[in-house]
Image (cartoon, rainbow, N blue to C red; front, side, top):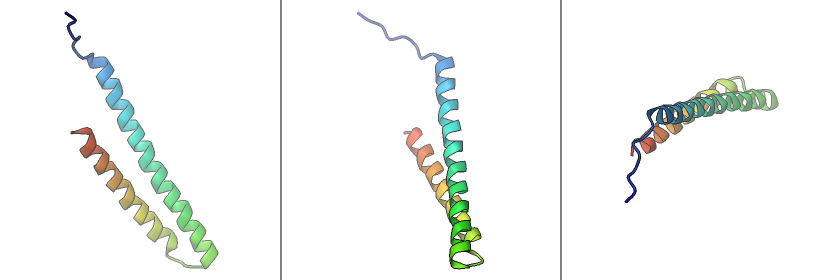
Length: 75
């Protein structure tokens, strides 16, 4: 009979750190790309508040994605 090994705490910590750093990179990329899109829209259509509005929307999307992933990881 094969007994299962207890989970390796070092491996779990590394897995958690990788998941969290990936989440931080995803948040940063979402906000950065939103800012770039807003800046482009501002220049193309001469709409003065486009950069702020699109960046704010990107922040909301990034927070939503973070919360959704946190809920999935706790299941």
